Amino acid sequence: MTDLASPPPPTETQDDWGLSEGDEIVPGRIALEELGGGYDFQAYLAWDDHLHALVVAKCVRPHLVHDPDTMRHVAREAATIARLAHPVVMRGFGAVLEPPRPHLLLEHLEGPTLSSTVRRFGPLALHQLLPLGFQLASALAYLANEATVHLDVKPRNVILGAPPRLIDLSIARTVEEAMRVTSSLGTDAFMPPEQCDPSLAPIGPPADVWGLGATLFHAVAGLLPFPRADGYDRDDPEQRWPQLARTPGRLPEETPPPLVELINECLEPVPWERPSATEVALGLEPLVGELKRERILGRPRPRIR
Image 1: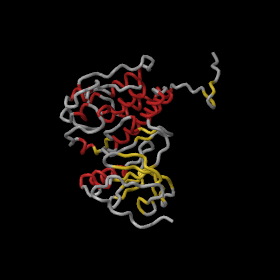
Image 2: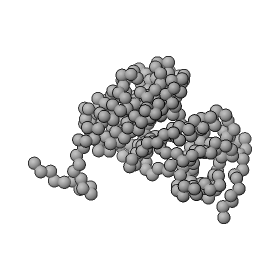
Image 3: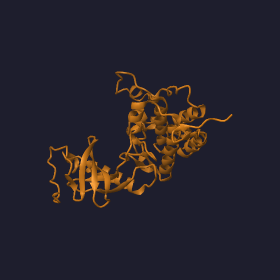
Image 4: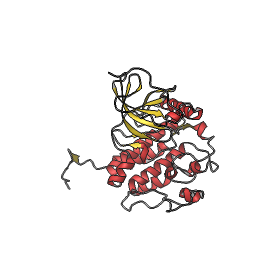
């Protein structure tokens, strides 16, 4: 029988909850397995009795439970998730913001990330890529309509499924908050110039369009649009962030020209010269419509000429 008592408080030196299958996160929420984590969080696949469903519990690490900055960030992420509702944006089911185990409760998504899929199988075929790009652009258009910027659009934050999901709102900001950012924020290879150096221009929805362009480039080519040199100097901004000084690499020759043009427009260094997310979706829509629909149960139809 599961012990329904509250979990013990963390010690000052403990940075891993060490939960095993069957351990309680909080009463009625049972850990099943650890999914991974980082400096701030450990994520567990869990069973929630109230939802009667599998969920993901994104738990603050024990040594940060009483850290005001960490808990402020958790509260902001919880509030962001709670006010957003879109089919392609990860859903949340609430949060526990008090000790002993503060955590976010997120939907459990079946499916690989875009990054792991490209790493394992290579670039996506057009019949996979174009609908994915359209759906991601639609999600970013919604976020812009909600005056919100994701700020970490990248292949690792895209779960492939039906529909796909854009995940990880941990550094998302309102547009007003994003415009006040004064230092680099995000993932180096998928950050627009203004996220690398906020003194260049205010950060807003165009930053997410740049991230989408870099993500689509990676999905088409299997490479980064702005690769860094081996042994680069992290203290040199133009070596750490080649997008500050270079143009993107070339996409494969077989890439449809309208798609090449759209991706390159997303990667414009000046934010106001990029298309909006809505314009990206509108640009992808006819390309999606032109996909050949010749398969029934996976078998090609004979073409009649």
